Image (cartoon, rainbow, N blue to C red):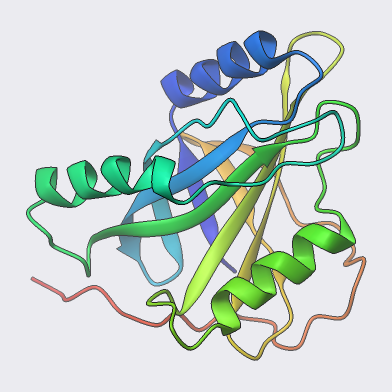
Length: 182
């Protein structure tokens, strides 16, 4: 099972960005620290405020290259520990679950042989009725069905996998790299 830890500061930033965007979808890329096996701590995320409507979002890669370059420079290009984790976007008018189009696009991203990432996580966020953050995450790997991931804030479980809405090919996600033991 893959798990992603968010900080309370990151959750508040998501809330702030979602309030600002209103009913327009926004999104970006995520970077993370690889903790162990299939456990990650979100290190940061970019925000693209253009390219979305109430029902769709199209990421513009050029807008996120500088964010990724700065992250890799700041982390000493230690790619086995700090790397691209995936994509995120909002669903302000729909449930915080990936649409069939989201699933097809993410699977195409990881299946692309020109893509360096062997896996990617898709995070879907939205503001709930009481300004709470609703979130779901799915992990995608080349040639495999997506699997739902667990989302944590420190030790609090924010989102646990539910019954799959589509077939899961493997019960455990095998990642494309492993962190070296010190």
